[in-house]
Image (cartoon, rainbow over all chains, first blue to last red; front, side):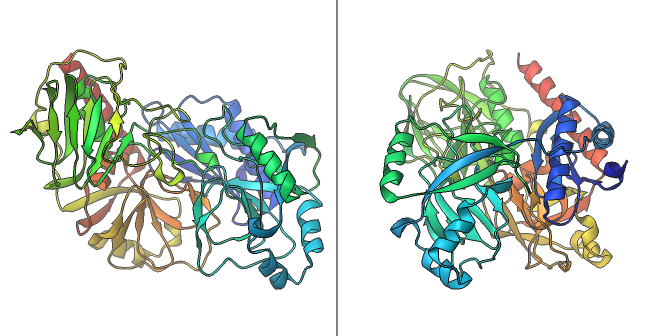
Length: 245
Length: 311
């Protein structure tokens, strides 16, 4: 019963309900978000058009032609009651090779200055453990990952077009740009992987709840892997791991 | 084949949207006016979800090498076929070599051109809708350009004689819009004084009114001290950023944002968001969620009746 009383259900248009689990970003809330989605899916409600999680809440878009709002609300409450405590089973870890050199890392020096870290120390922070994908969004498939043990401010004026694959740092989060968009995060490397590819049967390599293990590669390996990705020969490396929060 | 001689101010291929990927930041996109786009398709003998052209502010000039049935609905763009005026909200036959010419809007903002059989575009993640920000869908993920060639599809069609839509079916486009709104999810973040201000004020559509957002100018609301952690945001959401001026989320908008939302415009009023122009007046009125849902159901019944009456 603890799960039920700790969530609020709010209206989001006549065809939407938001189930709110908290007001702060924290791994505990994240696990309840994932647990709720699981129990909601188990109810197999055909009227649901889409379920969209975010940091602390779950948006349910449903078809009012198929179901009255009151019934959708009852089903959401039922899913809350049936919410299984999220057992920390193995998570999907995507290995993401990143080159942190030269033109691929235009803001690296700036970040070293801001944090007082050496290049070696920064790379150790980024590559020594997997980072949780809290959320995907902003642009298609963009993974918001955290938390970094430091915080860097966003750039005052955004870059007009950040190259696809760029790895950015903003606040205490890190992310990977999946399409060319303007952005304010500090770019410290680039991955040859296509995190998002509309042409793939599974367009998105990452979902909320997955983890990313960054791996340093040099510029030669970067171009080699990029060629493989372009030729559709690269197989993304994933592993199932028990990740300690 | 359709040759685009002039594309118009901003013309894209749209269908009824790309559902299923908002979790990953892919917005739904799709035709901004659910009413006019569906009616254009019904008139042309297509399924409501067929891909068609959405034209904004000024329509294009198109050359058809073979004869097709087509339909126009939405904003009035003074269409003519081989120099002869065409009626809006109607379907018609375009002869081989026909040139369809549309001009600047005189009423409304977005117009829809449906071709019997649908416009051919690859299915990208289940939809033919164009999402320009990510450069995908439609024709190469972009608005049409002069010289573009569009193929006409052979999608499931029904025989529907050419006709004019009866007057009682045509929505009235105005410059003073009433938007009905379901309160939530953060309506309680705003004071009673703010609610009064919001519902009693006349706002105006600002200069930024595109497929991502419809910004409003007018009396600012007081932003609460609380910070909203980014949450999911959908079409019709009235979000209030730091400046206190409400703006309305449109189908190409980012799927998660960090702004408090006082409410959502009801789906039956989405067409108003598509047809309102910068400078138009906007007022809000609260509506109960179930009443809004009843309107949607009535509208669906009406659409079904309309399609049946044509067959």
